[in-house]
Every structure is written in C-alpha cells, then in structure tokens.
Amino acid sequence: MDHDIYRNHLDKVSSGHKSREAELRLISREGKTRNVRINTRIQSDENGIHEFSHTTMDVTGYVLSNDALSQAISNVNAVVENSDDPIFSVDFNYRITVMNTACENEFRMRTGQKPVTGDDIRWYLNEKQAETWARHFNAALAGQKVRTQETMEMDDHRKEHYEMSFNPIHTADNTVEGISVHIRNITDRIRYEIG
Image (cartoon, rainbow, N blue to C red; front, top):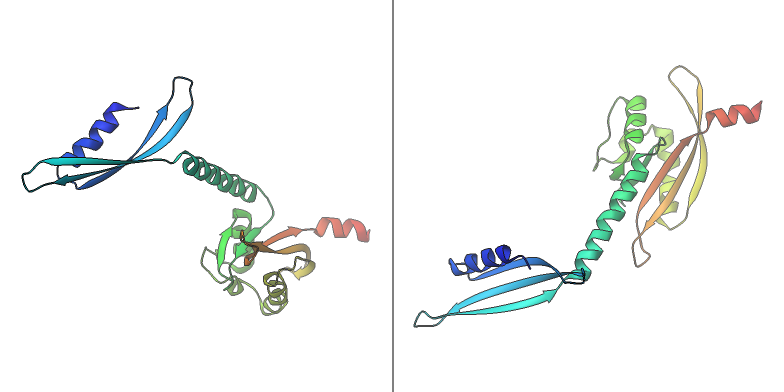
C-alpha cells in the first residue's frame, strides 16, 4: 500500500473534513493487484474526542470492467475513424451521435457545411434523399437492417454510385436506441460491371 496516499487521506479527514474517500491500489508479494476504496468518517463526541470509522470495499472488478469499457470504446473509435468510408450514427431524433472524419468531409464537400454532433442529419440531405432516407431510418428504428444503393448526380453532372447500410443500434436489453449508417462509394465497381 502507498503509505503517503493513505497518510494524506487521514490528514484531510483530521483537518476538518467529516468524511473522505480514497482509492488505493494494493499489490501483494505475489504480484496480484487489488483496487480498494476506503471511506473514512470522523465523529467527535461532546468532549472533543475523535473517533475514526473506516469502510473498505474491493472495487477491483469495477476498475477492470471500466478499463475494459474504455479500451472497447477506443477500439471502436479507431475502427470508425480509420475507415475511408463515411460512417455516422444518429439517435431517435435523427441527431448525430458519432461521425468520422470521412463523413464530415463528404457532407462538407456536398453541402458546404460541416455537420457536428447533435445536428439533425436531415439538415444535410436534399429533399429526395430526406424522403428516401426517412424510410431507411424508420426500418432501422424498427429493428431491420437495410442495405441499399443510391445514385447521386454531382454538381458537374457526373453520377456517383453509393452502397449504404442502415443498421439498428441495440442496447444490452435488445431495444433499438439509434441507427448506424455506413456509406461506400461503389462508382468504380459499377462502371467496371457495366463495362
């Protein structure tokens, strides 16, 4: 145990704080690590005599699961951000919750605006897209996976072809809490197939 951390913990309680909580990492001689949360309370009787009470709780499982969750979030962010394909997710109100740089760049190129987290994704769609995507969003919110292709005419009148996936995002109890969207430009593949 790190005695300096524990001594600091007790000093703060002694200096007028009625309670103090600290988390310590303990390493056994065998090298096993435990995380312990200590809550210390001080009570004084009418004669001014202080009485300390300690509550100790092993929080190793909590710390390990929190570390695992942080690592999982980092891994997902790395996968999303390392894709050259536009990827984003929205909640039930069509508000952007996650968007990778490729998606920001795609929407900025098409609309001249950079979407940000919290924006309604429909603000960045033309009328035809908004109508088509509404059907896909509704199907995904109902729990269905939707894969579709869309052809868009660019400002210079060239046609670009896209494959899009609209997938429900499920919570642990299997309720849908949002939609993830993955967009891939398949123009070269379509041109090759046409010949």
